[in-house]
Length: 606
Ligand SMILES: Cc1cc2nc3c(=O)[nH]c(=O)nc-3n(C[C@H](O)[C@H](O)[C@H](O)COP(=O)(O)OP(=O)(O)OC[C@H]3O[C@@H](n4cnc5c(N)ncnc54)[C@H](O)[C@@H]3O)c2cc1C
Image 1 (cartoon, protein in one colour):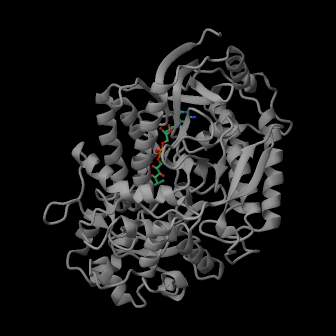
Image 2: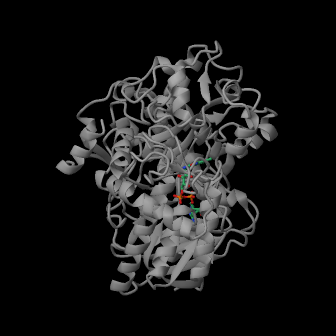
Image 3: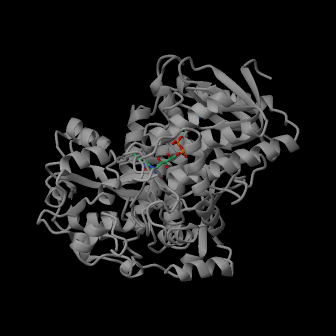
């Protein structure tokens, strides 16, 4: 065995976002020893950026809400390719997870009678998002972190895991390095929970933080796990479009939940012109009713700005493409107009949307209480990810669990806003619980020294290379990949463009394998990026292959050449697995039929 610093834990959690922290807390509460590894500092995981809130049918604002409505909303939003069991567990358990967070000290905005306040969000029938202004993620991370640290979890901050270690079929730990000194580390564990978040950095315009390079998707895939639904990438309708340096930064759906409206350059609220049939019964057909909904009128239907994200994003793209966009290539999102309706509108906006107010004031010199924002779609979330057992979160690889954004199933073709934070809590807890159970019931495996040596050799290769023939460094290759994915596998897709993307990924793989870096292992961002490329290319290939396979349009996946939904595709998931020869294998797999009692819930909530 090589002489690398080695840590032993019963359960190793990779990722300190909401899912990883919640998993670590649960495993620790079950009495096993827990190690937590994360790329950034504790408290800085991407979850900290979450704004609008946590979806849970607490029924504090509208007593008609319950798990069944939440389940039906989630399935409708996901266009029925969701894992229905996960959607059921999520809707049933989210309220308890939020109350637990409150008991652990999380601060929430309150109703006049002191209960957790809930706000409107796209695709949710009733006000359902528990929130703290527009800084919900920060509060969630703060609370989980405090709770976790007091439980005695061992935290390895600023460490990147490069590969999962296996003994035959089973995972027995992970191999990585510390990002400051570049020293290799071995983490031995009886069970591993991967909770590494999203893939947004595979695209040029994204709301995601630097950490979101698809590491967990790639780690699990290369360890033998299956990926599903990778074609379903969520392009959030409202990211900043100006100035260029801040392009992609999220503008929370909470703005629309509080009464913000979308207009084109002609001043028209274009969303009223395109309400999908499945949502007509629930959507206001006039501005007056839409406004009343945002102000809590239970008899009003929601405004079309609060339709699902996939639909709103496509409507925005249509306005822009047809020449009705804003000066910087977006459309207008206006919350300032509510001064026509509310006496203290400016103060109200600053109180309900403090981060948005500061974000626009400081980054774009726009006062959102007085003028409209310019917004356009931004790569935000991936519905696809590691295929897991719905109840335990274990992948098809023994001892390997996944939770949070890097796992898949609950969201189907499109995620409703707020359903990620609740997913992290519900399935983070489950992953921790079942990983601890696995650890208690199984002996530690043996780490294979040759596998470690091979991983270390590959990690150091970039230092030995002369560099690619064209002289491109890792950052340039990453940029080219991001541009290409944005252009060819983005919000509107076509067969020929996806084929070009696939060829492009192949060429970039070759260049990434030849890329060299200079300097040494200490504080070397070029080296880190060279190592990230393998993950980014793996997820980009996965997205492209799945998008080619799904010859229809559904949720986040829109094919210009197959613009309609196809019932046959509504019955399958696209599954990816690494073949014995190392190539990515794609197959369609039937979705198990939904049991009658859940079918009935959906019919009752049409
Ligand atoms: C601006 C913004 C606002 C949002 N608002 C909301 C909202 O209001 N409601 C909602 O439901 N959702 C929201 N989302 C989505 C939601 O925030 C994310 O889906 C969710 O936070 C992902 O959490 P996670 O625990 O899965 O991963 P993350 O929070 O992304 O954490 C991943 C962790 O894994 C670590 N990691 C990654 N790779 C490695 C590696 N190789 N080795 C070691 N560690 C690694 C990272 O360092 C990090 O600690 C928002 C997203 C954005 C971008």
